Amino acid sequence: MMNFTQLVLASHNAGKLKELQAMLGDSVQLRSIGEFSTVEPEETGLSFVENAILKARNAARISGLPALADDSGLAVDFLGGAPGIYSARYADGQGDEANNAKLLDALKDVPETERGAQFVCVLALVRHADDPLPILCEGLWQGRILTQASGEHGFGYDPLFWVPERDCSSAELSPGDKNLISHRARAMELLRLRLGLK
Ligand SMILES: O=c1nc[nH]c2c1ncn2[C@H]1C[C@H](O)[C@@H](COP(=O)(O)OP(=O)(O)OP(=O)(O)O)O1
Ligand SMILES: [Mg+2]
Image (cartoon, rainbow, N blue to C red; front, side, top):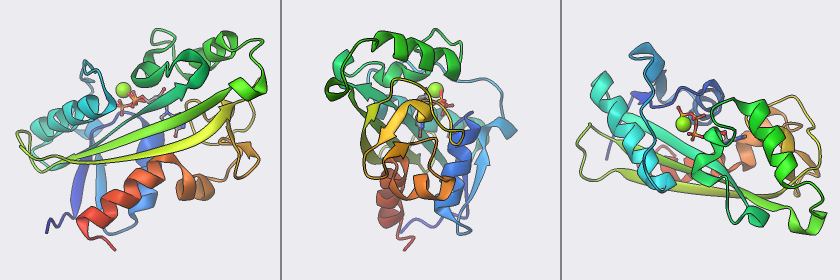
């Protein structure tokens, strides 16, 4: 059984760090890779799994600590699953607001019934940079893309993601509520079980 008190989180996204640390509680301390390096690895994989492993290995190499990575994104039905692994780069690196504007534009005039989407999260944990057996856990979250942004919480595409089970946007959920039902929460639930954390 693996027993971690510290993990480095292979992410430069403050929103992920906050959510993942809240889900893990006090049992494991997540340290940001930002403490060790400001250079972000190029996400050259063709899948969430490949990119998560790539980021985890890179962080373990830089920090010398076991590393957890989160590769996630939004797959929109009408767009054939795009932006998917390219979600963060959808508007060519101009950030969340530009990504959201581009998505609204791509779905302009698309009726509600065809606006289905899912958030995807893959967590990868490596004990060291060359770990031959990374632990992989995934979580999905089904919803719909709104026609305008709504809500102030969360990050990324949250203001555009309508959550059917709560009848509000993901950015209108309290952080605690989002962390109970999100794609990231589902992946983390599996990771906790796998690590024997509960
Ligand atoms: O709960 C979420 N709520 C809203 N948006 C989300 C969520 N989860 C992922 N997303 C979006 C943000 C970004 O556009 C992409 C992740 O891209 P992804 O490369 O995995 O993360 P990132 O570049 O922000 O940070 P890093 O790679 O350093 O972990 O999907
Ligand atoms: Mg990224």
